[in-house]
Every structure is written in structure tokens, then in C-alpha cells.
Amino acid sequence: MLDTLEGLDESQRVVATTWGGPLCVLAGAGTGKTRALTHRIAHGVAEGKYQPEQVLALTFTTKAASEMGQRLRALGVRGVATRTFHSAALRQLQHFWPTITGGRLPDIAPSKAPLIAKTLDQLSLSVDTAVVRDLAGDIEWRKVHAYTLEDYRLKRAELGKSLPGGLSLEVVASIHERYEQVKDEQGRIDFEDVLLGTLGMLETEQRVVDRVRAQYGVFLVDEYQDVSPLQHKLLEVWLGSREDLVVVGDASQTIYSFAGASSSYLLEFPERYPQGTVVKLERNYRSGEHIVRAANHIMLGRPGALTLEAQGGSPEPIHRHVARTDDAEARYVATTVKGLIEQGTAPDGIAVLLRFGAQSLAIESALRAEGIGVRIHGATPFFDEAHVKRALMEIRGAAVAGVQGTLAQVVEDILFGLGLQGDAPDHQGAERNRHDDLAALRALAQSMPSGSTVAEFSDLLADRAGAGDAPDVGAVTITTVHSAKGREWPVVFVVGLSEGMFPISYATTDDAIEEERRLFYVAVTRAQQTLHLSMAERGRAEQSPRVPSRFLQSLAPGGA
Image (cartoon, rainbow, N blue to C red; front, side, top):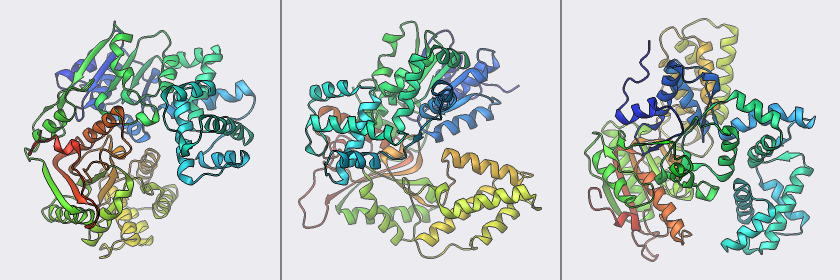
């Protein structure tokens, strides 16, 4: 029988074996929180504490949900629902909506922008696209806090925050009100309505809430510091008076406050559940000593900050670089990356982290100029590329048709027909990206166990596509820090570390600066072995000098 506690450290073992009431796991970066969580579920099933079909494990991304499901299957556990808050709510809404309303669930609008544009047109208002984006964010802010329109007016007046486009509170409130009307007229709901609709349904339909509570009796929530007031209300309704709740989080990684995330639910857990248990995971298995020391220093004295303990890893000091201009900083990154690749570091093991996406152009250009492949995280996802979709379709067709031959040979033939060549093109651009994508599919097929079928490979690709779990493509990743959360690389570059860039210029309040600090902490803790921190003294040679980021200045050479 599989040992569900094998390989767990002392604290992780406590997480896996503590029963009888709510459990809060305070888990620092790189401490194996997902491992502890999945082993708890597996151990609970093995001990008869959990019935798999009664467990709902909630995450914040489809990729994280997929990874948790894969880990559970590897531990011999099947039947556990591993979902995002939205996917769990949507399933319930889709199931019960026809019964309650007698009609089908409205379509979910892919974007708020067209609805807002229609709203503005009806109100005879004209704004630029930036204000439309800000209005979309403001509408989302209202909804994730579960504010009524009147609540919104009162809260906005209380906060005294600036409003999109310099518009008055009454005008913005009227936009909110008309937006909801336009949405109803078009028979649409938006992303937040999925949660709001589910919450409303459960609060008003006793027969529905009884059935949902009969289905799920155990709730586990990963990244608990990211829950919004709306998500927390929904969780409370799902849970009811029961106490079989496990939450895992790290207050130092709260970086979505702008989207309603609040670490208060994590930090106040002992007060809400005095009968509960709190366990800390502080042994960092990801990063070397210098990186861990820097991470601890960044968050020293902050609410909920944990003290990480490095468990080995590379002793390499943190590298710092001050470039003369932005272009010079980009060239520094490119030449350093080229040297690392020449020394044997895989391109997929290198990431360049940015505070905001507009910084990517100079970095991308410099890397491509050195002949280095680049993957922009947040651009067209791997499985959304037309050539990848075509490859998956043809692989599925080969599986259905029962094409004869080994998996590797069948896939090789399909990819060759789609233009995969033996050698990668010398130049960068779309052709090189196409080659790298198809080569990644070939490598994935070659990595399958001997005897795997085309049908099994096709199913794997479908699962990974659904989860957004792209294979390695032999390219350096360029991504924002927000998009990097939950990921790790052997080598990480954090660029643009000057005041006004990181922390960003619009972070003017104490709370906003602390959010930037947590974002820097997330950036630093993505590195496993090597961390490069850099800034440029000027944007261009003729521009005014910049001041080094306060976060960079606070770190002593070699670490904290």
C-alpha cells in the first residue's frame, strides 16, 4: 500500500495528520504547501476520514487545479473535485439554473469592454480606452466586494479614492447602474456574476444549498490570502456550520489587493476559529541561502511574515547590476543569458521578471538579437496557437483512426507534415516559434513511457490544454511578476529596479507600497539557484537620472 506520509517533513506531516476542526496552514514560499495539502487528502482517504467525492479542493488557477489533480492521482486518489472558485460555482449554477428559472443560463461575456462601450454610448459619454479599462476594473472591484450600488456609492465616498477618468462619483455610479441594465438587455452575465449568481442562489434556495452541502463535506482552499470578500462569502455558504475546513496561504504573497484579495481572512483565522489549529511551514526547499535570507529581510516585521529556513540549495550570492540606460540593461540581461546557455543552462530554466508588461520589448529584442528563443508569458498561450491546435487535432484523428506505429513515430510523422524540420531556423520570429512549439510536442511524445498509445498521448494533451499547462519550448520566459506567481526557475532576472518602476509610480500610499514590497518578495522567491537584480540609471542617456528602488537599497551585497 502506498505510504501517504512518505517524504514529508515534520511540519508537513502535522498538516497531513491533524484532524478534528478547522486547520490553517501558514506556508512560506517554496515550503511544499501543495505537497502537504495533497498528501493530507490522500492520507485522509487512506484512513477513512475523507470520501474522495465529498472533497472540494479550491485553487485560483486552472493550472494549479490540474496540478493538484495530477498529484492526487499519483498518490492513488481519484474522484476529488479540484477546481477554481469560478469553475466550482459555474458547475453549480449551470446545474440548478434551469430548474430554478425554467430557462438556460445566460452566456458569459468574454470581456466587459463592449458592454461598457454600449453603456457609455447610451449615456452620451466619451472616454478613451484607458478609462474603459479603469471602469471595468472599478466594476469588478464593486462586485468582488459584493457591494450593492448604494453600498458602492457609500464606500467610494468614504475611501475618497480617485475615480476613472476624473469622473464624478455620481457619473461613475450611473455607469455602473446602466452597465448592469445593458448586460441584462443583452442576456449576458459577466465573470463576477458567476460567483454572485451562485451565492444568491444558495442564499435563497434552501433545497439547492441542502443538495450542495450533501455533495461536499470537506473544503480545502489553497492560496487563501487571495480570497476576495465575495469568494469568502461563497465559501462560508458552502461550509455552513461544519468545520471540516483547511486553508493554506502566505500573507507575504498577497499581491492581488487591487482585485479584492485580502489577507485578513488568513491572518484572522485563529480569531474566527478559536477551536482550530494553526501550522507553519517555513522550511524552504526551493532557493539557496542568500535568496532565502533576502526574502526574509524584505518582509521583516510585516504582518503574517514567516521566517524561511533554507534547506540546502545553491550558495551562490545574489548578482546586482547597474546599467547606464534601459537598452544597456537589456543587453546585460541578453549577454548574461547567452553565457549561461553556453555553460549548459537550459533556456526553459531562465526567466526575466518585469513589474509591468511594457518593459518586455527591449528585453525581448536584446535576447533575440543574441539568437535566444523567447516565450512571452501572457501573449498567445501555447495551446491557443493555430499550429498547435492543428497538431492536437491531427493527433486525435490518428488516435481515432487507429494509425499503426509507435507513439513517437506517429507523432513525428504528423509534426513533419505540419512543417517541423530537423534543425531549428537560424533566425527568430514566427517561424522559429512555430518550430519550437512543434518540437516541444515531439519531445513530450518521446518522454512518454514505453508502450504508451496515441490515444493516451492525445488525452494527455487535452488535459494539459484544458489546464493551460504548456510543455517546455526551449525558450527564455519573459513575464510580469504577477504572472510568475506559483512558478519557479533555476535562474531569475528581476529588472527595472528603480523608484517609479518597482515600486511603480502610482503606488503612493503606505498600503500600495506594501503591496509592491510583497510583489518584490514574490519575484525574489521565484529563483531556485541564481538571482540577478538590475536597474538602469536612465531610460535614455539624455534623460534625468533614476533613484535605485528602496527594495534594492535595503538588501546588503550578497543577500540581506
